[in-house]
Image (cartoon, rainbow, N blue to C red; front, side):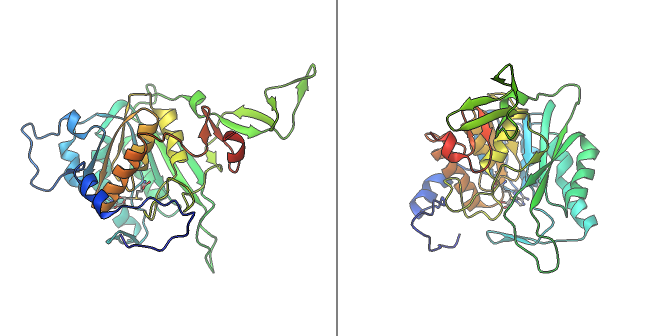
Length: 321
Ligand SMILES: C[S@@+](CC[C@H](N)C(=O)[O-])C[C@H]1O[C@@H](n2cnc3c(N)ncnc32)[C@H](O)[C@@H]1O
C-alpha cells in the first residue's frame, strides 16, 4: 500500500516492513493446488485464522455448515481499486451472475440454525435481494445512514447502505434483542406518580434503553482519528458489525466473513468472544486484519458500545466517564 503523509493525531493502522514479515506467517495461503488428506481444512487450521485466497478456491476447502453467522460485504457494483485489484462496474445481469457464482456456495457454510447478513448500496441492492431470496428466508433489510459520502453535481449524495438479514430456518434461529439495546436521550420525559416512566435520570441527562429498529443512524464510517481506521477503501465500522454479531450469535459461536477486507468481522468477533474465520484475496489486507487481531488481544474497546449498550452518535464524552 502506498505510504502517505499523515497528521500528528492520525491514528490509522499501518504496517511496517518488519511487521509484514511476522504477520504474513500467520496467514493460511490457499492457492489453486492446495491439497489436504480429506480435501478439507481441519477446524483448528481455519478457525480463528485469516485465509489469503480467492474465495472460489477457499470455499471447497471449508466444511459445510461450520458457521453460526456469516457477514458478507462483497464488492458493490462500482469500479473500485482494492489495493491494485480493480473490481469493475458491470451491467445488472453480469453483476447478478457474479453474485450467484459464489453466494449459494457461501450459504452451504452456514449452519441450519444460522443467520447471514449481506451489505450493499442502492445500486446493487436489488441483485442482493434476489440472491438472498434464492437461498434463505429474508427477515429484514436494515438501512444504515452512513453520513459520509461524496456529493454529486446532478444527483443525490449517496448517504445510505442496506444490510440484508436472512436465515436458513425462520422457525429456528438465534436473536438476542437485549444485547443490542440502544441508549437514547429522552425527549419527552413522562413521569408516573412522580417517578420516571421507562427512563433513567442521571447527572448527564435523561436516557432510555430502546429496542433498535431497522434504521441505523448512530454509526459513522471509520475516519482517520479513530483507532480502528486503516487505508482499506471500504472498511466497515466495528460498531456496525458489533450489532450484527451480538444480535445473531452467542459467545463461542463461529463468525465467517468471505470478503474480509481489513478484518472488521474477525476483529469484532474476537473482541466479543466469538470464533472467526475470514477469506481475503489481497495479502496486504490480510496482514492488516492480523495486525488488528493482535491489537484486539489487549484492546477490546468498540467505539460507541460500552457498558453493554449502544450509545447515540456523538455521546462519547458520556460513556467514557
Ligand atoms: C467491500 S470489501 C470488504 C471490506 C470489509 N468489510 C472491511 O471492513 O474491511 C471487499 C473485499 O473483498 C475482497 N475480494 C474481492 N474479490 C475477492 C475474492 N474473489 N476472494 C476473496 N476476496 C475478494 C477485496 O479485496 C476487498 O477487500
